[in-house]
Image 1 (tube, one colour):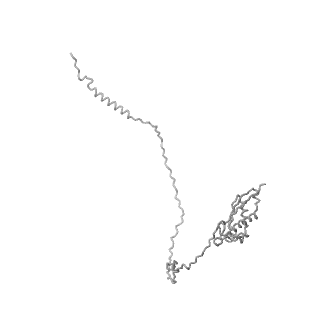
Image 2: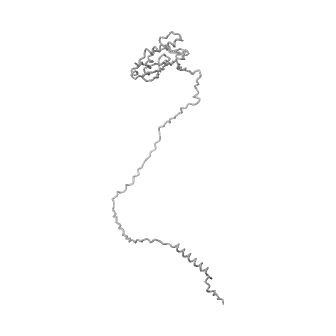
Image 3: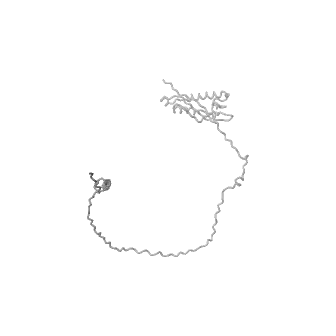
Length: 241
């Protein structure tokens, strides 16, 4: 004989519903725990506020003796008298000082009336290429070919006769060659003396010697007197004993 089961007493019949309800309850509980917030409690200090009534000081009203306002200005009656001008004033007329074109070209100057002044240009020629060299005193009357040799010979004699070794150069042991350049102008005077040497002492002495040259007859180029440049070397040398 088999035993019959009571359907009301079957336990597993609603187990899935119970599981779902339990799961939902656990999820709800977990959500509430996560959402629960706590706050720190601060100590509340309760002070007693005392309010005092302000004392308003009464300011006495003082009457100040102020001066009365000044009286209004008195209206002054002005009388204007119109006088007719008797004297006539002459106006000054300023005339233009500009010259018109007709007045400017009224006086026509002919080309023949213009005088051209010739300006003589001073030419400087080197001694080596001059047509007629300057005439040194004592070389007069010599042929043109020997005039240059005579000039150079007289120049050497002049340097030797006027040579003087500077004492300062001897004490300092200064010696050497000094090149002197000068010009015999169109009137025969010695000008434009320049020198170049080892020391200023020797240059000064060389310029002094050339400055003592006599006046000469000027050199000519194409029949006209011109400036002639000339260079001469002067040697300063002493014997060491």
